[in-house]
Image 1 (tube, rainbow, N blue to C red):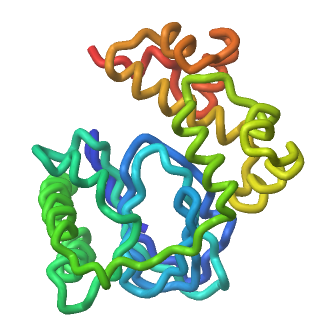
Image 2 (image 1 turned 90 degrees about the vertical axis):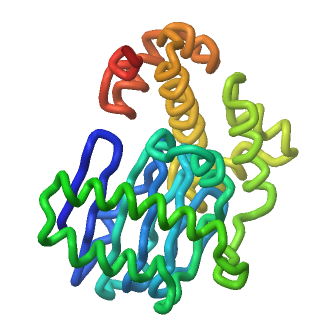
Length: 262
């Protein structure tokens, strides 16, 4: 694996001859993740959809969206991954990127395909500084090109159970309110055990862990805009600050105050 990173952009090229499913964990973060699938045998779960990957598929995972790779076999797995925050995008592209699809099939005669081939070659010879500059420019070109991609290049996903999809949307829309399995059960007329089973089946995570992680990410964004950690915890309906502090530090890896902009 080769990686390059700056303060707001991270690039990785990975080639796993015999991939181990334990190396690809389920995760969620406040950055975009662009993944170019070069070869392998896998599905990818983004939010409430499952995508069956084919060579040269490109995924664009939005911030605060739960996602993970699900290997179908131990076939060789090769990919490019770029992480970047929304503020790395300039002008109208920041808003336009949020409207792009989750997945695109990149054709070999396309401009985007050639950009990825250049990345594979140049990351071996450029300095970290030069390659970061190249990657940032390439990223803007890729996202701009996607705005004009033909509709047939956009793949259709396999959706989760419609009730579960609605539950996930409800959590997003009510992230600042008190949420529990009982509340979700009452709202959607399903049993608490159904909700517990659905989260384990579709996401491999408990319902309340999912809810708390989403709340923590929203708090992180509030703190970045200048909201105090105490106020952010209150806005997201945490029962007490000490609980919020422990969960934030465990999930984000730093204390809440360290994310506040100077």
